[in-house]
Length: 177
Image (cartoon, one colour):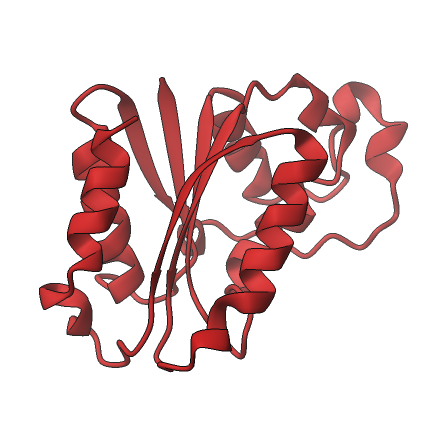
C-alpha cells in the first residue's frame, strides 16, 4: 500500500513530526511510506470559485505547490493527517491542503484508508473534539476506512513527546497495516 503522511507543523523536528515518523517507521515494514511536510509547499487557500469544476483536467487556476501535492495524493492508497492543534483546529497550512481537495479531481484519487495523528499543548480532553469530528465527517462522506487515531495532549515544548507511550501507539498503528 502507498501511504502518504501529510504533516502540518511549520516547525521542523516538531512533536508532530516525531509522531508521524513513529507511525512511518511502523508502516514502512510492509508499505511504501512518504512523509510530506506541507509547510515545504506554498499552497494558497481555496477561494471557493469552483472554476476547477469547469477547467480542463479540473485544475485549479492557482499556480502554487498544490499541483505537487495533488500528484502525491493521486498515488496514495492511504492518507494520514498529522497536525499540531492550534486553537482547537489543525494548522492553517494543512487546512489549505484539505480545502483544496474540494475539486472533481478527487474522484480520481484511489484513497481508501485514513488515519489521524494529533499533538496538542493542552491536556484538556476536549482539545481534539472539533478536529476528530471533522475528520469523522470526511471519513463518512468519502466512505474511507478509518485505521485509527493517535491523540497526544500535554506536549508543548519541542521534543516533549519523546518519552510518551503514544509514540509506541503510532508505531503499532502503522505496523498493523
